[in-house]
Length: 139
Image (cartoon, rainbow, N blue to C red; front, side):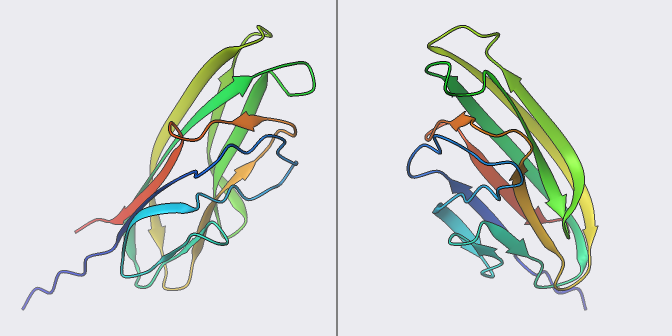
């Protein structure tokens, strides 16, 4: 008998992250969907409740309000503290400009593996309303 396990999450930002730090886990705290409870909106970490192949998607909108912020930003989807997929947005040093980046990846996870989004650039301004982290179990 085939048993389908429904695991998925979708989370955004409730407010802007105005000055990231290098290595900071980006916490998508506005959790709209969290079937099976694998995503933690307080820590920003998804913990695989079962082994399988998962799809993760990241969309980031960066804003460049002034020179105290970085005009570009690199972020990555991390699996057990190792880089899997990198995204980069770049406003080309123009004040008031926005730029977005997105990526989708498929990962084989074991029960308990952890997936998160990590900033590889400090002082980036991540806009709410346009930045999301999503994942689901294939199958």
